[in-house]
Image 1 (cartoon, rainbow, N blue to C red):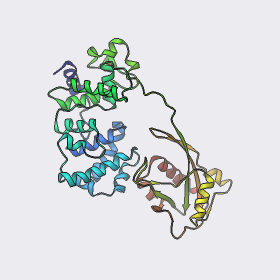
Image 2: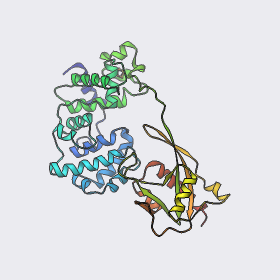
Image 3: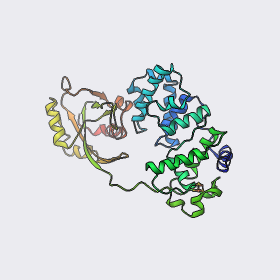
Image 4: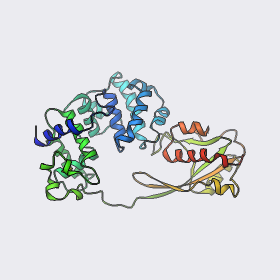
Length: 357
Ligand code: SF4
């Protein structure tokens, strides 16, 4: 075993994370944890993971669930395409692998939502097979350890990092080594201030010796983040709120959302067209019940949301919009809803006392 791997494996056994709920579990649970951990930290993932495996303890139960049930369990975790792909992958495993999670790298890689590093992590952690991983944390560790210049998101730089990941991979103890790399990136060689004094591989770290830890990896080239605006219409009728189910694509695909418009005039026109008579709370109630505009940040853009609260005098007999439904606010909070909608519904619950009857 090379020096990097030996030091990492010894450190992982003594100082790594060895009590995570998916460690030592079957491939289904390792897969689930790997998907949940993409873009999300361990502490946030654990309660979602536990709730998820309680409801869907195996591939068959997950495949048999509706997409809506799966997304309701994902609600609040973000990046909802992960939940939709997980569901599709479970159905594919039932169809192609008789409900048995596949044990071959190529079969795992062929499942929806699984890239090269995730397939490798599942192979290494669940099946103890020799495959190199390269997730965001590992890119950071290797960019520093090997002093690789350039933004790791660039294809050429990424290829160099894969080369290093393969070259450092030991012949034995692959599961412990893989966990060690993840642990080192998450707890010692962190994005902010790396704790080099506690690092087991410091003696061989090129960035450490060159005094370049703070400048590696090279950050993503700055581009202005696009800004978008939307008015979220919250029409209440007694304790029911009007929601619409998004199509199964896009950032909130398959989730229940508030109707969205460019501005208040467009929202009002839409209500009129739907045959829905609405009123806005009159002053001073309107001021009491006005929900403040806020911003929700996605990876690729920022959405400035203006909430617009209204009362429906009566509901139209039938909504023209496919996928629209009136839900009790409490029921809506249990459904598959994105975080900004959840925040608004929680405010409505808190302010309901102020609403006119
Ligand atoms: S010595 Fe510092 S920069 Fe190098 S791998 Fe360890 S924590 Fe990261």
